[in-house]
Each structure stands twice: as structure tokens, then as C-alpha cells.
Image 1 (cartoon, rainbow, N blue to C red):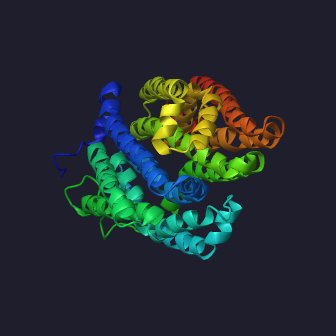
Image 2: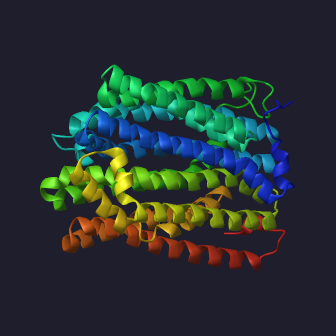
Image 3: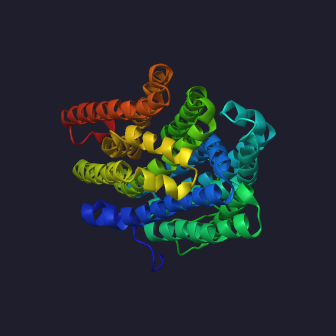
Length: 462
């Protein structure tokens, strides 16, 4: 029995693709936009309420935040994909086992990762590029975030499952609850109570706690299509293995992002001269801006995931490819808008975060260079997530590595030596273009290979 806000996941195999994408992607996009806007507003509160060095300290925490997210998405994305495939195979009992296993794994990961990171927090932050001027800000922020990882992991993990099991609107609402509460708490904690950057982190955890209660209540309710059942399996090695196999792609993507940010921060500190810390702060502004548009594309891919997983599991390849084509058009359109905004209004965007003119000037230069090839980023992200959604993690991992590791790090080693800080920004845009070309070539090769196989043997496709 389902409540009025749900949609039977069984319609994923028959309803028109366009309507399904609207039904699943629009709520995910709204949630992603809200989350991205909060991240931007949070940075604005920190930049204007604490100062330019706090923005730099926040930028130093980015790689550690990526690690936090990595160990969560390993479970969340893997679990969501597996549950969609099981539903496509009409195996409801197995999909329920996935929900139980995801909750258990989220709790285990959060305690182990959060605890170990807290023990070595200062050493990790210095490794990521913290200086004596920025370490206190990064430490205050991350200490609170790490203590709250059990709440964050359960919220994110179950929210992904909520969308995958036929409740895209409820998944959107839970994200909006978190963002809305965050926007209310942050200025109160930062400005009224004077808690500074620690207040921003406390606002995040408090808001996620409220949303977590909402999500857990959904899966406790017997009216939900898939919900917790005590008599179903809570520790299933076979399911966990598949969750880790498919979740490995977004996990490695976040790990790569962590490694890359370390290289970027160190290059900016080395080649930024007296303004090294401000160069790191400028990267923080660029990072928040680019993630706004990337998160919208992720909203599209999150909406695509249950459609792709279900139809792949059901053997309906034509619907899979139709979903992919529409997703690519949407992804490119979104990042093209990002290119226009950053090319036409770099000063306006920078001034949202800070009133420090030196920081604004560095960020403006970064926008001009970094975003040159930004329109193609949307296509690369959609193709990478396509392979992940149809249970082909190796290809997804390969594509994530091309953009964030294989090409970017060599560029970061070579180009700044010749072009200074400009070389850092150029490294990122060059790797985006090459990764896009690799994604197109991989998709072309795999789809041509599939055409040569019998339509009745889709599981042999790779």
C-alpha cells in the first residue's frame, strides 16, 4: 500500500520517458538547486560575517568534505542503483534487503570514518594546505561536521533510496527541509550568537537532523512501497558487495576530487606569492559556483538513475538510450548557462562572497580561464553517471578518473610552472575538455558494441 505522495516504481518501464524525467528529475533538480544555493549562501554568510580568511579556511576543508561525502555516496548511490535494478526485476523482497543493509552500512561508515578523522584532524588539514592563518577556521568547521556524520550519512543514504524506490517528491521535500532549516539557523548562529564558522557547521547538522527524522519516518511507515522489515536481512554480504561495486565510482570520484583539491591548494599557495591564501579563497568561490551548476546536472542524473536502472534491469534498451539522449541535452544546456553567467558577470558573482577587492580580482581572472570549456562538462557527467546507473561501475570509474585525476594532476604539475596561478585555472579547463572527448569515445564504442549483440543478451553488454 502506498501513500498519496508516492509513485509506483513499476511505471518506470511503461510511462513515456519525457514524463518520467519530469517526474523524477524536476524534484531532484529542485533539491539540488536548493542545496547548492544553501552552500553559496553559507559561504556568503561566512565571508561577510567572519572574513576573507574564513573563506580560505572553508576552501581548505573542501577536500576533507569530499572525503566525508565519498564514504557516504559509496553506500547511497550503490544502494539506490541496486534497489532500482531489483525493482525492475520485480524483486521487492530483495529491494527491501537493500534498504536494511544501506542503513547499517551508513552507521558503520560514519562512526569509523568520523572517529578516525577527528583523531588526526589537524594533521589532515595541514596536509590539505592549511596554514597558520587558516587552520583554526578549518578545524572549527570540520570538528562539528565530523561529530555529525552519523546523522548526515543516514539522511543522505536513505534519501537516495527514497527517490530510487518511487518517491521523488518526498526526496525533494526532505532536501528542502534540510536547506530551509539551514538557511534559518546559519545567520542566527553566525551573526546573533557570534559562533562564526562553527555556527555554520552547527546549522548544517541541526538542519540535517530535522530532515533525517522525516526520511527515517518514511521508511518506518508500512505505507511506503519499500520499507524497513525486521524479518528481512540486515547484513547480506552479496548485497553489500554489489553496493560497494557500483558505489565505487562516485566514491572514487570524490576521492579524486579530494586529491585534486590538495594539488590545487598547494599550487595556489606556491605560485600565489603574498596572495597565496587569497588565491585559495578565490578557488573556494570558483568551487562553490561551479558546484552550483554541477549539482543541477547531478539532479538530472539522479532523476535518470531509477529510470535507467529499472529499464536496464527489465531489458528495455531503447528506453535506456532515449533517457540518456535527453539527459545529455539537459546536462549540456545547464553547464552552458553556467558558462554564460561566469563569463559575463564574474565580478558580480565574486562580490556575492566578499568585499575584499584583491580576492574579487583573483576570482574574476579564475572565472575567465577555468570556465572556457565548461559547457561540455554537463555531457561528461551525464555519460559517466549513465554507466554507473546501468551497473557498469568500471566504465564509470574510468571516466571519473579521466576528468579528476589522470589529466588534471599532470597539468597542475606542469602548467603553473610556466603560467603561475593562471596555469592552475588553465589546468582545470584543459582536463575538462579532454575528459569530455574520452567520454564521447567510450560511449560511442560501447553503444556500437552493444548493437552487435543480441537484444536478448543485454547482460553481456560491456
